[in-house]
Length: 113
Length: 107
Image (cartoon, rainbow over all chains, first blue to last red; front, side):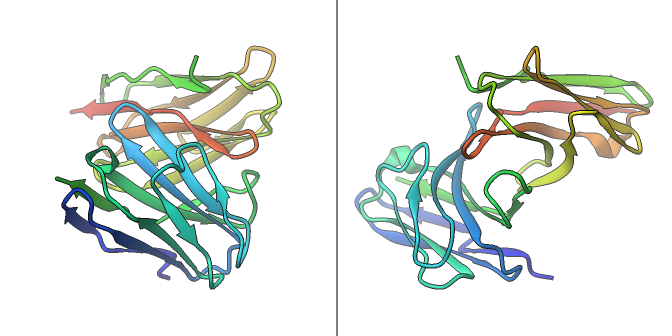
């Protein structure tokens, strides 16, 4: 079972460049999430989606955009990358918001120079 | 005050030891609670849910104290493979993660 798959695994960008991180899940989950994880701060929610065609802001949405055109995919975009966005990004999915545990992808390590 | 707080550790214990982690949360309306395990440079994985009455899964016991707003994780007979970071997760309107407690089990 693939579960939650993130691409790419690693990426180095220059300040001002743009890129899109892809998350795909094969569990037919309605809810999908994007987090960033920084040392000593735990996981912080960037954006989430409660179903195809819907998105909502999380705790730290600034500088990011998302889209959920298909139920199985959740894209995270950085329009103009900044060094402060250097982080490890995790995608997750779940059946419901919070009452069921989330399943995580194995992360994308992003460095902005 | 952080919404979910954990002692960052590190906890260094010998094999076979019993170790306990606590986690406090600020929102009394929180409904769901979990412990996740995260290995170095890996994704978080669900260790166990935490139920109001407390629950046990092999060597792991989780408890919830709503009055004091904390949850705990007890690991008995620690194994080398238990070395990881343990994340406390609390559901308010969305999931809130603690920063994690790092555990190292030594031979």
